[in-house]
Amino acid sequence: MSLEISYDDLAPSGADLPPSPFTSADALRHGVTRWTLAQLVQSGQVRRVLIDVYVDGRLPDTLELRARAVRVVLPPHAVVVDRSAAWLWGVDLREKSELETPPPLAVFVAPGHKRLTRPQATGGERTLEPSDLRSFEGLQVTSPIRTALDLACGLARYEALAALDAFARLHGITTFDLMAQLSRYRGRRGVVQARSLVPLMDGRAESAGESFTRLAMLDGQLPRPTLQHWVIDDGRRVYRLDLAYPDLKICVEYDGVDYHSSAEQRAADARRRSWLRERGWWVLVVTKESFAGSALDEWLHQVKAAVRDRSR
Image (tube, rainbow, N blue to C red; front, side, top):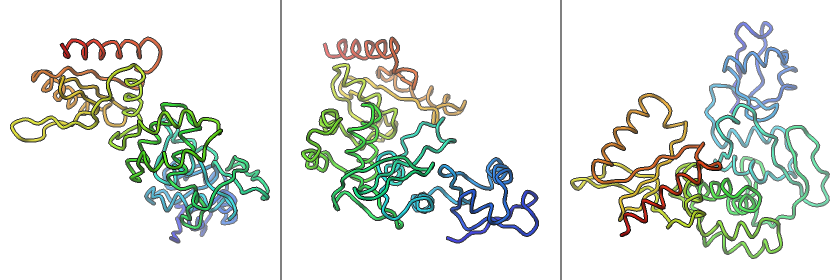
């Protein structure tokens, strides 16, 4: 897409930004200083997608646009891997607080090629099979299966399971797909973790927080919960629960800041949980702060006690 952006009052007379995506050097060649570019970013007319890669702020954040932005700064022989490959496949592993500062691209080159030394990209060499690669908008990217397994090995456990769940949800990857490839990872650092997490993968998890909650429950020796359980009342679906033990009427909900922080959202949550409790459900709510130290121990203890009491 070739789209030129007017600078309005910020740019020199008659100057236009280059077609998106573009770098600060591209903008400078069009008469736009770094100061002016920073002002355009601050005003929302321009959006920074990667380190020193920008697009028209009006363009939607599509996977195709992300790929074109990456292509601006990478040579043809580079392969996008790990977190960056996940981002190109729609699996963004960054927390909300990290979204304003794009990380460097994770990029590898085939043996025999010079390693990249650009500020936008970090990486080294990696041996990849042709089946590990996909071509996407002119880029070489590790396939969803390869990317999922690389992250299962390389990320911390909670984040790794969140990545696996997201690939299952968005790309239909199954446990069988990944187990069939794990033999290739023999001896690789992190493969033991990957072998333990792949059987736990579940595409019904709708957020990283739900994945974190499920793994904490399993690590705490709790039974495997049912995900996205619908509560039926008078023959109709009323509420869907993040994680539940339906037979025991026990529900564990994860409240993330994106969907549970406004006054309206909190009021709706309160009505929902009051309705559930009036009908015999035991409801516990966890948040991002519930996964450290004594807070984690406390809510896991509560769930275990509820399971024990209601199993009698």
